[in-house]
Amino acid sequence: MKKQMLCLLIACAMIFMIFCSCAQQPSQTLTAGTNELTDIAASDDTAEAEVTPDVPDITFDGMKFRVLVYQGLDPTLDSRDFYTDDSSAGEMIYEAVMNRDAYIEEKYKVEIEVTGVKDVVGTARKSISAGSDEYEMIMPFIDQAFSLAQDNLLIELHNVDYLDLSKPWWDKAIERDLAINGKLYFTTGSISVMDEELNMGVAFNKTLAAKNNINPYPLVEDKKWTFDAMYTLSKGITHDDNGDGKYDTHDTWGIGHSLDCAYEMFFGAGVKIASINAEGKPELTVNSSRAVAVMDKLCEIYHEPNAVGTVEHFGGWEALNQMMVDGKILFRPANIYNLRQYLQMVDEFGMLPMPMLDDEQDSYYHIVLTNGCAGVCIPSTNSDLEMTGILLEELSYYGGKVVTPKYYDSYIKYRVSTDEDTGRMFDIIFSTKTYDIGKVFGWGNIISSVITKTIVAGSGFASNYEAVQSSAQKALDTTYEQMVSIKD
Image (cartoon, rainbow, N blue to C red; front, side):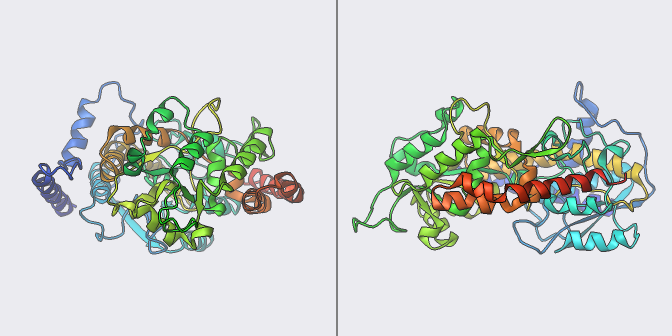
């Protein structure tokens, strides 16, 4: 352990020297590395009114804290919360995670052992069903975690001593939006960066905007960044560059997106397929009057040939993404992790929140894509819940102190864009995250059978919903019965 600590300290010193040597270069605005282990210890001594974990002063005599994460399934979905090897060494997030983990290991005299697999749910199900106490924590995708809970393979997190989900380093939105009957079998927060990576926003070409005297930032700040505002700006940008009378990949477009993914805009308007009511039961809300208004507006916008260029029209995502890189698209609704493929752009690009339906909307909203976002779960075979509760609290707390700043400042604000405006946009995006229990379970296939089908056709929302309403409600009721029958 001491050897590992020494290696980490040397690595941090080397990173500091590297970044210092680059500091005079205008293109390098990454935050310089520091001796994180020393910083963490010092922050514990100097914190005054800061909320800290309420855990005992205890050590665990070299015990292992075993973690199961995704690795090798898809590069965009591989864990960046815990690492299985050093292939990412030198990256800011990797170094921050390793520093956090090394500090926890030294403080509690434990060894964090990480196993990466392509199928976390299958591996965990086999292990837990066999009664094997093989992992203290697993990180399946949130959508899949429910199936493990329904089979009594997970611990309800409110039952774990020292794990306090009310603390600021845990995500309150996930409990608000996904806790059925008040019970929660997974969570996320500062222990993870995946709920940021799997969040939504609108990437935009700042160079192209400036050439056309467009500055959307004041619209966002004044809560005027709406569907209509985005639509109006887009119409003014779309242009037949080569004058051949056709609008295709050779031309400039206001919005580049997909009819199949327009549902992402639906959630940005503050509406949901289903919501948890005051009694803790999910209820379908997709047919509200507001949802109908949102669908009408999306059909109008996405069928405006002089505003929106779609994947379906361009022949695939590769073509659309290349157009973005080539400076041919002004606005591109996208996941945060999609920003990486635009780092090669010559034009400067920034990020905006998802637009609101209108300026009377109470807030911006950003859906976390739970089909790819991993959550923290505790197997029912866990035989040391005391250690697990303590370490989860500490890992998330120190994640907020060490990992989140590196992710946010170094990866997002500076590698993507150097201006303070874009930083504020990310503040808005990350502070207005939301989840949809209806999207998680897919009752009635409402996204594809109602929302997407309506947008593709340009109409038919009421009839499309009527066709699936009964089956969706029945599936919802079955899910609820299964969840409340879980024995804790």
